[in-house]
Length: 171
Image 1 (cartoon, rainbow, N blue to C red):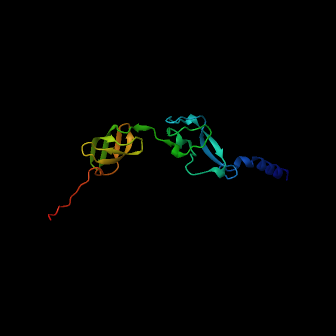
Image 2 (cartoon, helix red, strand yellow):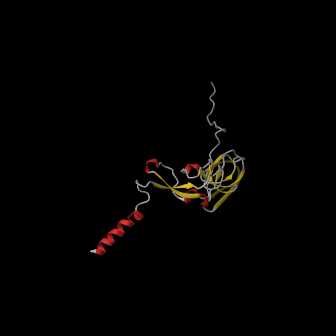
Image 3 (tube, rainbow, N blue to C red):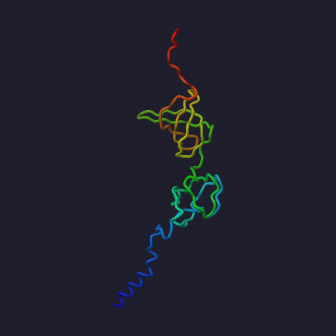
């Protein structure tokens, strides 16, 4: 009987250690900066810590893992110990708007490359539009590295070059 009482007492003492960290009573575990991070700074693992927020203040898009923020660039000033939304960060910019980039299009047995002008900025994995300077066609592609874009779809005619294929009828 004494053993049973000691066992029950040990369970009662250890119970808080086994409580779910994401339960409504304790709040939600999120990632927060442990220092102020300026706009444009790249976020390192040492810049982040875990914090808990009340369950009543939880909203979508909150970063809950260090991997979601590590290596990303801050879009705005991130204050120490404040919640970070995934929209507050982006991949570091490796292609600037207006830069000349190498476009690559791959099909089975064929790889085509051409130069183009980036119509927007982007980081690795971001989709940007590239203009072919010879045909003025706009091509959508994924940034694969500095100055490099891989085409994701066929080229489309530029909006500024309408085509009129109708015949004029004489009156």
